[in-house]
Structures are given as C-alpha cells and as structure tokens.
Length: 319
Image (cartoon, rainbow, N blue to C red; front, side, top):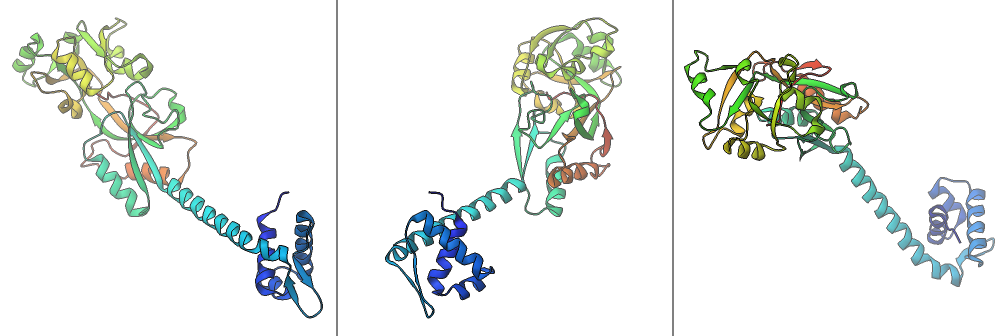
C-alpha cells in the first residue's frame, strides 16, 4: 500500500469539514477531483472512510481510526519539510574558506566584513588544509574559496584574485654562515646565487609547481636543487630550521611563523615576488563564492599591496 501525503491531506480536510464542498474550497481543488482522491484512498485501504448522503458526510469507524494517524503523519512531514528548508538555508549560507596557514595581513577580518555587509546571513567557516594540497581544498571540493599561493596546478580550473605581493625571503638556521653576510649587506639581504648550493627544505611532492616555485627552480639555470627534507606545516619547518637541516624560502609576511629560537629570515635578491591569492573553482557560480572574490578584488590597495589584480596563476609559499 502506497498512500501519498496529498491523499492524507484531502482525507483530513473532508474529515474536519464534514463537507466535500467546503473541503474542496479549503484545498483549492474541484469537488470531483477531491472525491476521486478519496475514493482512491478508500480503495487502497479496502474500507470506506465516510458515510455519504445528500444531507451530511460522517466518518466511518475506519475513518475515525485513521484521522489521528493522518494528522500525525502530516504534522511529521511538515516538521521534516521545515527541517530540510532550514538545513538547505544554512548550507547555502555556509562558505568554507580553505588555507594552509592563516593568511594574516589583516585579510580575514577585512574580507569577512565586506562579505557580511552584503550577505549578513553568510557563515564563513575556516578550514586548515595540509601543504600537500596547494589548492587548499578547492581541487576536491572541500573548500568553497581558498587562500592559495601561486602558481596553482591545473590553473585553468580556477579564478584567482591576488591579495598580497611580497618579496621572497630565506629563513636561515641558527649560526648559519650567511647570517653574517646579510648583516654586512647594506640592504640586509643575500643574493640567490649565494643560496643556490644550500640544502633546501621543500613542500611535499604533491604540491607540484608550488614546490618548484619555493625551491626557486626557475632561477637555478637548470641546476637541480638540493632537497634536505620535506615539510608540511609551519611547525615542521621551524623544527627543521632549528635542527640545521636546511634553509627555506618563504614570503616576507610569513617570516614571523618561523623566526624564533635562533632562526632568522632575510630578503633574497634575484627572485620574483611571491603572490597570495583568493581563489575559487571557475565553474562555481554560487552567490557567496562570487561575493567573496568580489570582496577580495575590492580590498584597499594601500593596506594590501598588489591586491585586487585578477591573475591566471603565478608564485608563493605557505611556510
């Protein structure tokens, strides 16, 4: 037996009105259509639900038995519909923001304020993603938008808005010989040529072109880098530096993540600047995703140098 909610609604209306005419008006259906549905329900149940005559409509014993259950079923279904509607609304309002480390630079509160000014019901949710995923969750759909360092793999899949452009620095272990050279330099910097032969800490191989960028493969003239270890978080990077395992390139604005316990960071000449971007999948046109990208593009250029420029792809590290 397969009784539909519509049939229960029709039955309940007739039972409460005790009139097919008034029930039809209440339901905004024709009386013949209502009568047909009631007959179909009676056929399915194998019993009459109403005594009908020209003067009155009365419930049969079977009809009286069914009525409280029909009301309970309809109430349960209304509650289910409300729950589904609430969950759907919450899901539409939720925006998962992926990142490998906190982007800092005042970006999160600035973008949150801009997003909520136009979408006050939005619920931004932050999600930490391993450095092994350079898309910070965009590739597998676990993030809706993400802070990413460029270049991205499969860049044609994504829309990117650059929100920060910074020089690449190098973090040096305690007592590293290049510390003295940087201290003696008028700019407090070192040349990449002085670093090229050093053992480097690298992102996981899964990071693809981003791993190569932070090893400065493009500036080595075809000479392969010396990879001394793989790091997948800021803490792993700091620990490897403290232990003297190698040096690591990083964005200037991220130096504070590792500079402690004798580790220092200095600018590097001869390298292109790193670029931090807000990205989303190109085929994701949901309003909140578009709003977040628009907010990123509208950031004050004075507080975020290089912000608001749309790029197809380019370079930066999460350390």
